[in-house]
Length: 224
Image 1: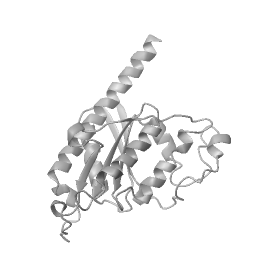
Image 2 (image 1 turned 90 degrees about the horizontal axis):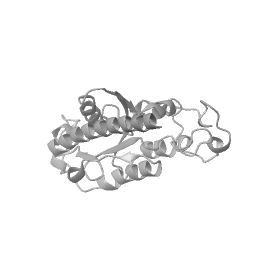
Image 3 (image 1 turned 90 degrees about the vertical axis):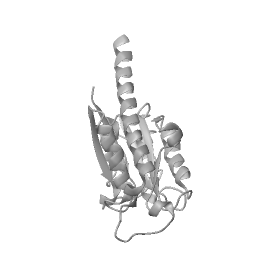
Image 4 (image 1 turned 45 degrees about the horizontal axis):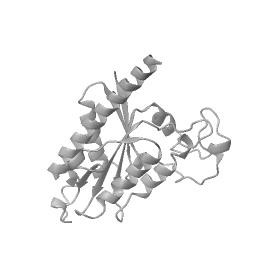
């Protein structure tokens, strides 16, 4: 039984450290077999109008296929989110928290959580979080928790790597997390061995739980 896992990168930097880390997570998920993945990087979005304005279109005027009053780069994401069995969110750490891109993306999930037609559509989907920071101990867990809390609000099932990543996966992009910068190495996360190991473990865990959930749902439906 195949599953679909969607990865969303909330960094404004194309092909940067955050996107690279997310790609490693998704690659590990695919390696388990029968997994289709897609990586969406918000750095490609040229017509994104930001977060939810609480106009309540989704709550009162939503129609089939018409999710949100705001028509922008988020519009094609709603069908992808509905189809996905798993969702992995990745953000750089900005002042110990999410990037504004990722914050706005999470805000814009409202039409498929509180929508008139699309209500609680993320319930029982598998979720996971990844974060990239410059220094060690400078906001990784608060960033991960912001994403995990959003998943819990939506009724999703967050997956982690237990003792090695209680809230998700983190990796540092400076040299050994010291804040030192090598101008010839723009992808410092690739030198964080622990971060890469946990990223691969997370991808595997997400894929496995997605498969278990899909098989379990099919078994329950058969019993009915």
